[in-house]
Amino acid sequence: MTNSSGASRAKAFDVRLVIALLIGVYGAVLTVMGIGFTSEDDIAKSADININLWTGLAMLVFATAFVLWARLRPVVVPPEEAERLEQDKHD
Image (cartoon, rainbow, N blue to C red):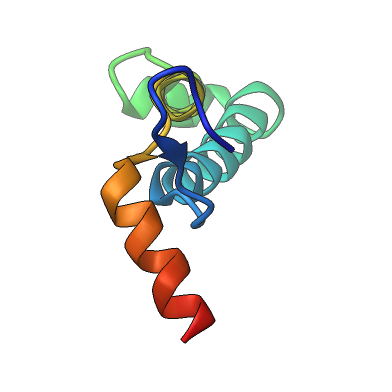
């Protein structure tokens, strides 16, 4: 895909999305654990803070930020490099 400056977006899998997926899954698990499976004893042990819930929510926010970053600032291949890669593919 080419943008207005003539550069094309990289078609490789963006590592930021992999990181967002991993952090998002862990964040979702911690959020569910914090909402449904944390006892009052567990909360009392952690200075009356539901650590699983708050850590899970923070991880979900972090994952969302990574997805936004990957979507708003995609990896762009300079036109010269894209041409060289096309030539290598045809040779």
